[in-house]
Length: 343
Image (cartoon, rainbow, N blue to C red; front, side, top):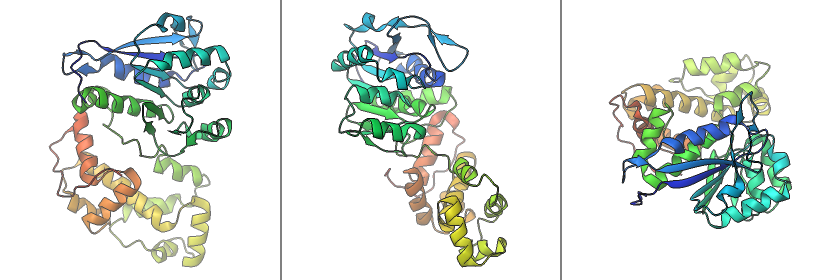
């Protein structure tokens, strides 16, 4: 939605000691430089506040200057954003801070959290009965500390009415870009994504877990490292369980059991994930048609690749390519004939 208002929207970031620096500066960069196409001027005015209004330590060597929360109590706040960090464990028990946040939130259009800032947001009661996400490492704490919150571990961000929550660190940038798209239109969000050299826009339903990192984490001993490399080099082959087992010099039944136990997914799901990751790269960096990429990555048919993309990324291959191009990394790619909608 594009606004005709000439007045920049007020975005207030709430910090406290021991925040994660990138949780703040990533979204702050987005909102500080997003342009309202209706005016050609900045779409937001940003303020960083804390309870003390003093220099606030972060998890790095840098401290952040801030204004006292009291200074914005009467302000017309459009979006209130609670930043995450190890200090959230203390901040969520600070009754004075929580009371101030409850007051601030009453007149805002939107309230959001980045990473473990969801713990502080939940302490205000604003997440009760709502879906929410945080960094995967804090999801259990959020669920146990606030049982009325519907915690989801996988998405990179969630919008539930006027309340937004995001997963760890860089997911705050994804959420900020999505908010800009909602407020100022996709063109403004695309321009910001382009200036930050980031993809635009990862759908909120996408997983906060990198498939490659997840495989490496589960296979810390490197038992299947060579197998995964071989799969990547032979994607056009059938890659049945029997094929993979033969490569590992194991019986198909034993291989399937050992692999699923170690990796947490079946061999077939792992092959589909690697095919999808490779297809992503080809959609981003080549002008190959979707049909050609589907064959090259071993999907065979375009529709089979589309279903895999929707399952894993919640966008179709053509939408994925369009989003990547719209981020400013347009190389004149042919989007192909496959279409679909986000899940």
